[in-house]
Length: 546
Image 1 (spheres, one colour):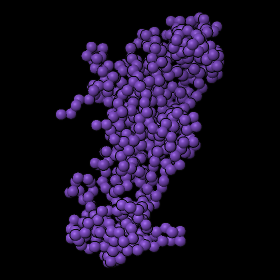
Image 2 (image 1 turned 90 degrees about the vertical axis):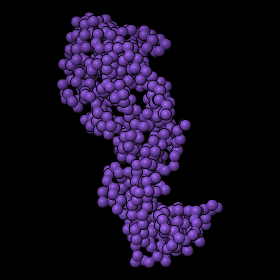
Image 3 (image 1 turned 135 degrees about the vertical axis):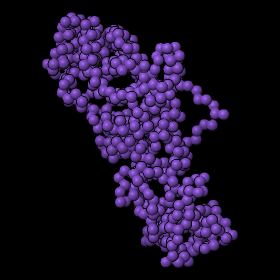
Image 4 (image 1 turned 180 degrees about the vertical axis):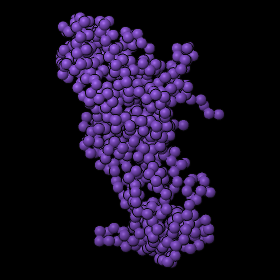
């Protein structure tokens, strides 16, 4: 009998709300700003918001927070929708904060009419200085006492484009001595003459996040507005606007954002990595973006499992990236077909195997499924890994060495007889003999060997480019490093020219386990020449608590 999983604190709140009739049905939303690509931290929020709605029979809206036209683009809108769908979720409605620009403007006018908002001509620097500090109260300026009529006129003129960027702002009139700095007459509208990706040049004033967010939640009747911990100080302002505007009482709840080792999540820093060429783009497999993880070979279910394992907490913590790798490794171990690939090839010639002969040998394709077999070609000339041969073997070396015997996986036992080296001292060719009676599955040799190595038929192999991706940063927590670019891992990408079994059906996105090497997927750029990206290694770096 499996133990029932305990509820997280948001689930407890929802169940109490439903039990007490506060809400008949829950509504959540995922509100990304379309100014970059989604990353694994957003995946946690997506899984949480959509997952709660699914669990409790509710709905989730996708709402783009497009209130800053300078940084936003339809490219990001499209990528966000693709990522959410790839993760396995469907939104009930697709909305944009820009859908509500007229309503938000009317809300601002309502606040002015109630004497709760005013137009301020001060510079951004003066406004910041007058706000005071957390230990000293702010100071009111002369604009705070403007009449309702003057504020209405000025705000209308702001909308009509009569003023330059930064010349005026609209501020909420709350309390310049409030302990919470966000309540000290926050700016709720600013002038920005910029082309918007949806509304064009219709607007030249745009609402600030704090003014647009809660009201958009309210317009959509969102019951549980879930965001990360840094928005806790914003919650009183969220509630203040809803109370003063007398609109649907959406409520904000906060949970810990995802922080992960060897990774940065800041959009600004991720954009820096892209723009300065440290990565090939937003979908570079070293990036923590959902598109990067997808290209690297992560599956939607492995990311959902990861989000489920880290849970929903009230305190920030640093999650080991090994847990994410563990989740995809556990899945691919069961689902990825096995193939043999040699990444650092050296030629092996079997001198007593007929050079004109070839045969097909059976080998397993999936673990614990002996009926799932494939046929691989075998001849007298093979590729094996450089690392599987040692000229002067160390103690307990069970692979190939002069005079040593090993089994070729699913094939024969061989004995190393000689080898050749080039002028640089590198082994270029190994010669061996085989025992014909030692064929796997029909071994009558009576010989026992301790080592087994993989191989590829050199006469019938496909060439492939294999990209070995590793963690992008050497620092465990580059997010806290001021000069985070100094911690870029110089070995985060190593490219190998490899050989793989012929006949490997490899469409972009297909997953494989390279025997004894790791888990790989076919890159989207793969064409006549196969290109594989390493998803993760075979070795488990993380073991969950029992």
